[in-house]
Image (cartoon, rainbow, N blue to C red):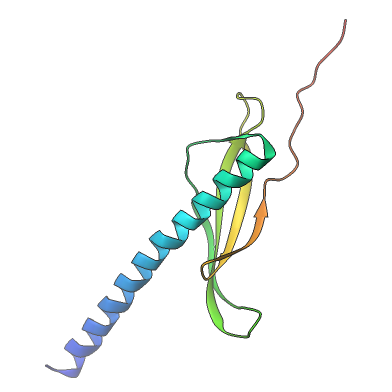
Length: 109
């Protein structure tokens, strides 16, 4: 096996590991968003999250980890869509934001 083939094989293995790790971490983000919405009494829309940021960051022990930020949508009344986010550093949820909810305008006559 040539050095080029070995490097290509190692790169392919690393990409496969990253893909599988991303699927696992994304599921952790879905679970965190779902439980936060349940706790806040809002509806978790689409039952999914979407990646909005990906970068390397250091954890509390100084180790380099992948930091992923996922966005999700929720609804307080059923006919509005509001955005929340969940940040994971490695496999740990480090920030969860369900944000301020808009209240519907009611006019009293």
